Amino acid sequence: MDHNISHKDARGIDDLLGIDWRKAWIERECTRSVPDNAQAWDKRAKDYSVSAGASSYVDSFISYLAPEQGVSILDMGSGSGTLALPLARRGHSVMAVDFSSGMLGVLREAAQAEALSSIRCVQLDFNAPWSDWEAAGITEDCVDIAIASRSTIVDDLWAAFEKLERAARTRVAVTLVTEYTPRHTKRMGAVIDGGPPYIPDYIYAVNVLLQMGRYPSVSYIDSDKTDERGTPRLIRWAFISWDVDPKH
Image (cartoon, rainbow, N blue to C red; front, side, top):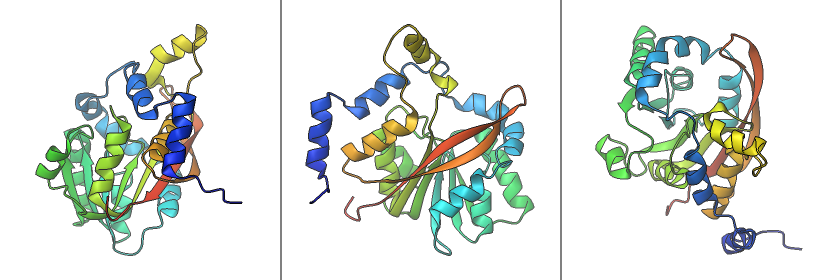
């Protein structure tokens, strides 16, 4: 029996269920409690650089990514270098992109201290149109792999995935949380009041990709993270990757 589901069949199932996952994500992002902005991340840059790498998350991510030696990587939403620095240490050239100048400043200092010349920093908002990406030097097929690690706080997930695909020659990988996040407190209030259940970010991502005609692989990364009170807790992230159609 053939269990393969075509892109047309997948869209048919979504239509039957009445779910447009792209639209659902866009609408859900309107419930974000605090808008994501560069200035807030600028203020967190110094402290974040210390805590971001203090877990097994990095090793697990790179293990799942399994990049061949010496490939080029676009790290979208790089922050202060949680992945850009260890990837550069492993011999990869990295285009580290973030909308926070503070985060990129910390990354540049760390790269200079280690004499890592294979990291190029670019300031750009993930939500910016493709023309802005091109103006910043991120062009069609400019890297082998594009990644977005815990950084898909975007208005339109479909559009974000399309831009990552345009930049990458072979593969895209992203991580999204599998549980509730405080970014959507309005949404959680509606759930408590009897509204529809909260859907974790990674569920949207997988279904948006299916609607795009992609069939991603999904693995999981368990990582400790320190909360605002200084208490460590376990967070599970979904590592979602897919091959890029050479014809885009």
